[in-house]
Image (cartoon, rainbow, N blue to C red; front, side, top):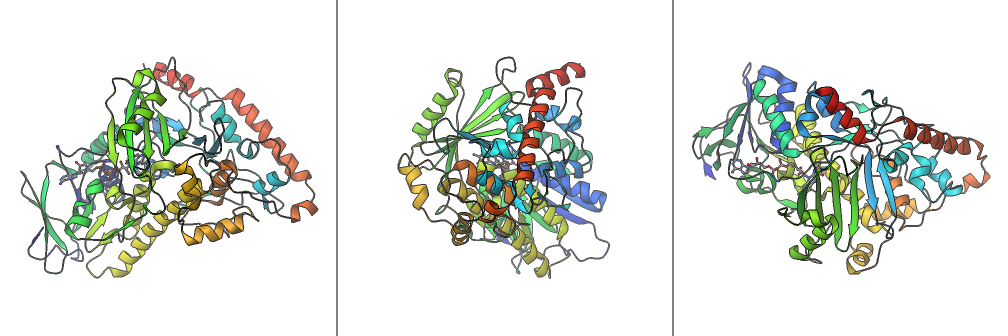
Length: 535
Ligand code: FAD
């Protein structure tokens, strides 16, 4: 890091804003594409990415909010999905978190309410089966039956198709604020292919792309970045610098020295080992969900794509060595994993104290990360990009906007941290030291208080992490009632209430699920038909 003259002034009237993005992984290219879609030629965007420092190479499962990203870029699924070997995802399937052989889903579907009480509360009063998710959500049956969310002719399930009675627990969408209904699916895709696709999208719209290493970051006398030096392309300067350099956080941490708030005390999984297993669509089902299978010291993800299955073991190195993690993962995959090279990753769990400091904004792993149990990495990127457009800097005296942006990023990450902690403290599994420790480990104080409330009243909008910043209440219901480690009682009022309408709703969900399972193709059938049509 060096010191130099003044940084460009963002307040110059009529001046084209110039943004330098350092890093060209998923975060760098999502940001570049989004800024171009938002501001067009009124902004200069440069992406500088190293040919020698690779991107993280994982990060392939998303959250249903991702739809707004592609919509904002005015992209149809047919424009980008085939190029990224993408598949559909209806939710997350948790295996063995309660006990061996048990599974449950966290689907992209609202939880209904009847007579003012969430259906989960009614379910505790009058369970239809042992499966909360099957009784309360249509989507759980579609996941079990491995259905596609599109009909064979390509027609999608309409938004709101799963809008359950009451609709009192609607999902949040960043840009569109509150939507009436949860969008029913997200995607799995090959991360490096998405970055490649967005590189073309961005450069076609004027993004300048430089392949080079940033070797120095220069600060002016006020501590703002004045320029970055590259190995072969000289000096690059802009009004705003976006740090997308991954866990290195070259600008935010290394140059500006912004402190890091570690989450390790509450979320100890800090390592991963990943494999890319070839997909054979003739033999293997493309499950419409990300699967998280509990293991002795963490969990294994399974992400089915058209081209391959991405899989990896997320674990705490305090409990398991890298060699043993790799061995377990290879055994989990089976003989076909034998010759596949493993990618070992050290994860920095937590967040930068502030993501926007001076004229540098960190996005992606540079700003923070929590283990990928709920596929929130790309969601964090998307959220940060939306916020940077919303609070786009006007100049150096931007403290109010900077603070608002930083508060928003902090809240979203802290909300997800609470939600992830619930997965562990709420899992019934306690069969070894790792899982026993999940019941006694520190959790955020606010979560501990909420859990005490939830034991007597299922999560609702009053009792979850402030709704706009966190997950919708139905998500907490899914984990709490699915993972089964915390006993939850139904509201005593329901003993006095008339259960007729709730029974009608349970019956409606079952019938709707049966009908859709009959009507919808499997993902394998759907994608085989799409490919045949494309020829
Ligand atoms: P990276 O991919 O690390 O990219 C960094 C970029 O910076 C590269 O282009 C590199 O070349 C460049 N760079 C670095 N230093 C320099 C330099 N000096 N000069 C020039 N360029 C430089 N997210 C999800 O949403 N879903 C998931 O399922 C998921 N799974 C994950 C599993 C694991 C094990 C991990 C660790 C993460 C996962 N994530 C997931 C998170 C996701 O991978 C990231 O959020 C996403 O890939 C963004 O990474 P990035 O672009 O910030 O960093």
